[in-house]
Length: 68
Image (tube, rainbow, N blue to C red; front, top):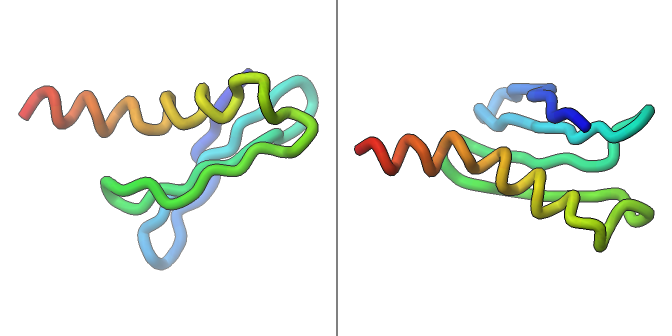
């Protein structure tokens, strides 16, 4: 399982993709320090992958706030 930062668009949003086995199973979208969206493919839902993706995407934000 791996997470890749796949895009940075004109509105400064980052798209993170979660890959499991041979394909992408979900996405998360952030903008600066806010969270905009989370999507996990239906066949992979209810297995903790959404929680994992959310936790990993927000980890740098929480670390930054803890240091301040």
